[in-house]
Amino acid sequence: MEINLTTSYVGILSLIVFIIAYAVVMAEEFSHLRKSKPVIISAALIWGIIAFHFSSNKEIAHEIEYALEHNILEFAELFLFLLVAMTYINALEERQVFNVVRYQLTSRGFSFRQLFIFTGIITFFLSPIADNLTTALVMCSVLLACGKGNTKFLSIGCINIVVAANAGGAYSPFGDITTLMVWQAGIVDFFTFFNIFIPSVVNYIIPAVIMYFFIPKEKPTINSEKIYIKRGGKFIIFLGLLTIFSAVNFHNFLHLPPMLGMMFGLGLLGLFSYYLKITHNPENEDQKFDFFRKISKAEWDTLLFFFGVILSVGGLGFIGYLTLVSEFLYDGLGPTIANSIVGVLSAIVDNIPVMFAVITMRPEMSIDQWLLVTLTTGVGGSLLSIGSAAGVALMGQARGYYTFFGHLKWTPVIFLGYIASIYVHMILAGLSL
Image 1 (tube, rainbow, N blue to C red):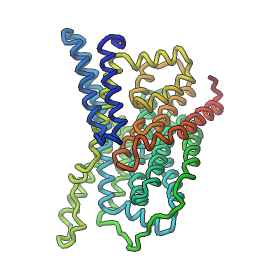
Image 2 (cartoon, rainbow, N blue to C red; image 1 turned 45 degrees about the vertical axis):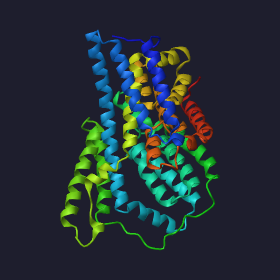
Image 3 (tube, rainbow, N blue to C red; image 1 turned 180 degrees about the horizontal axis):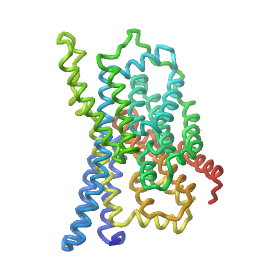
Image 4 (spheres, helix red, strand yellow; image 1 turned 135 degrees about the vertical axis):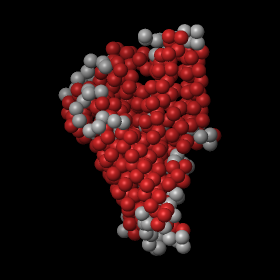
């Protein structure tokens, strides 16, 4: 049954609730109210309004329950995936792994500008393998360890990581949740995604080159005291790589959600933490390793923010707004312009539900157009800090250094890369407006 409540009080009231919540999220830098709180309230209110409207219709009530459960399942998979990634990052940080990387980089005399280049390039080529979110979290930890209080370097460096992670994740089925959705739907073959490698490079390079000249011409402070990885740290690195490998192959070969492979890796980390516990030297406190403390230090504000966003946007989708927007774009403007606008929308709303709406609509498009929308929804999220999972996660991880308005200052530069990447893909694929 198709439901369209976009012009009713249900749709209008729900939209107002979401806009207010979103405005509060954007004001976090000034209000210091955690971004998860308004969107959690928004999610509850939107679904409450929908349920109240259909409270006397039992048939629709079951559809509402099914739609809500579908959104919760979508969040649960993302939540468990992120929880494992954050736990591993906390474990590596506690074992001094990132401080050792910082020491190795700074002791070689690399300047902030060189560190900016290295972290960006590594992020771009690691995100197609380890996914853009996990890569952004890992590289941000390295950046924070290297920057140590240099606000200007850390702010621009975090923006560079978000852009690089999203651009790198766009040309691989495992690089982004949206590319995974397109691949799972059987629309684009595995190796066909690599056709948008060059546009992805263009998307990353243009803003990176411009931002490079605004990085301070300084070198980070070198710590003369050599730092060592704590006991078990190297094996946790191995377990982290094995976890990523498991996540990829659980989906690729077993056709199971990637988060199951991640949870397998979390279990392995738990077992190893037990080994460290029973074999550590009581006289050496540095050897202690508390597994559940690493889980507790996950960025819960970020995780709960995703809950609020996915359920809020899912509610607006149930009301009919996403379908309305998709129909207007593809029927009225044509696929190239529509796919370009969809990328901008994904920065404002969230790329997961936007891509889900496009896949559900299944507009008549060529493979090159599907690649275009995969590119735009992937890299379009870089336009705003809350437009992608990587950006949201870094807002929590680099609190005080990477902010919504700090990112917004560079949006025009990032938009240049966005437009250029679309143009390059159009030339390579022979597409027209």
